[in-house]
Length: 219
Length: 233
Image 1 (cartoon, rainbow over the protein chains, first blue to last red):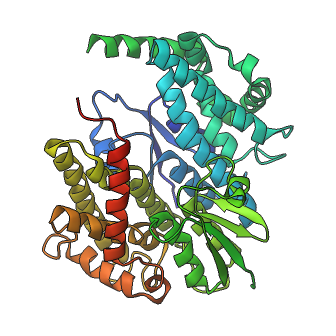
Image 2: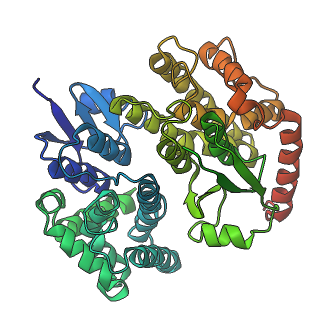
């Protein structure tokens, strides 16, 4: 049966990048459609009426929303290649725990860094670096978060790497100085085709952030 | 398989703590329930959940599992042949259940707990409107997902039943404290009847707190919150 797989995407979105990575790891052919978030497509509004956000995976006409939910769905649907979640129940729980930490603590900390200024930015920066250090501690000397194999936690976190330059430039710090092992891990992930193809250039993201800052200030 | 779980738990008022208890009950797994004292975090809790220092924590064979919905999925994975499956077997149904669970934890429950904390009538109304809108979305979802069966999980209590059902106690308290019906049979008939069935279920009965007790606990918490809050300018 012919599979129809569409990814509703927004190129700077680290959430959307997760889905791109997962699909490419599995070797799934998909139709990548860029959304203009200021002018959302009828398809996006129809497929994600609750949140009206990207990413959305449309698989044979049926929508799946929320990036980590989509990644698990991809893992459970295309089972033959590159399992992303471990098979052991305890290891699965650990993987989900760390992906949740990335989602609820790390990404939200990152979001507060670039738009803020002064004292508020210092606080946000500290919180973000703290999250990265916790993650670096969890990574330890392993090649990937799950051990030898690239997996779920790596997919959940690595898109943030494309935002490192933008974050560093806006708050005057260096991730490489604070968390060298984490940067080494990110570069290791970037050697995978799935990751290299799904992450935009850091400088492009930096320019996007500057544009966004301008718009926010204008309001 | 056989196995014993141990739970470090601050107890009966927390909807998040209810979730793994229901799951363990469904699986017929015996467990020890350790109540944490309010306001004091035990050494065991701090060792088991150093990242968040929060309950619930499930200790199985000495290893900690944290975050209520992750624990529920772990229980389903770790005791696959005991009791019913908690997660649906079909990946798409699974994704649907997970989507709504995420909605509950990220949008709906924060709105509901925001009602009590809302400053002023307008803010309160906005929070209430969000809760009501959410219930309408969930009513619609229930119709599509249950397909005429008694639970979101079909014939048995499943992941989404647990994810939403744990909030029923607090929903009733909110109704009581605001003098309004939220789980209105006229507006959300499917959910209203589902709620009765859920609360009557064997796996739920013993762990669902009584509304009266919960309302008293809520008053205590609100008093503490108001006492700690800075005076209005």
